[in-house]
Length: 138
Ligand code: RTP
Ligand code: MG
Image (cartoon, rainbow, N blue to C red; front, side, top):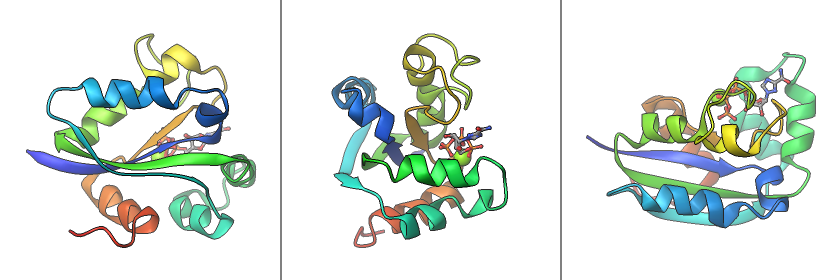
């Protein structure tokens, strides 16, 4: 079942020089392909749309601030069961609970600065791809 998912390498991943490390892990998975990729400092408005589900949570404001603090990499990855696969590759939200071998488990300690975002369902993937790559063909 080929799918597409939206991945963000968050500002901590970019500032720490981990783009190649993380992109390399994605590229090495058999049959997965990166079909769009952009380095850009994300606008507040873009982030508010992306994180709309978290409005009102105590971590919402600091999360938006952090995500707007420097460049991120946005990309679309296509391939077999890639939505679940990218969530596995990323690891759980809290990097201390994430197993070594996952991106968060290998490189993170702080919940907010957890390096990577990956869409959590087909519906989220469709919604999020349109936010970051409005010109993408379906
Ligand atoms: P993401 O959406 O970024 O892929 O991460 P996720 O599904 O694993 O986590 P989610 O619950 O959607 O939270 C979104 C992002 O908000 C930050 N966060 N901080 N308690 C906290 O301080 C807290 N909780 C969440 C993290 O950056 C998380 O990835
Ligand atoms: Mg999420």
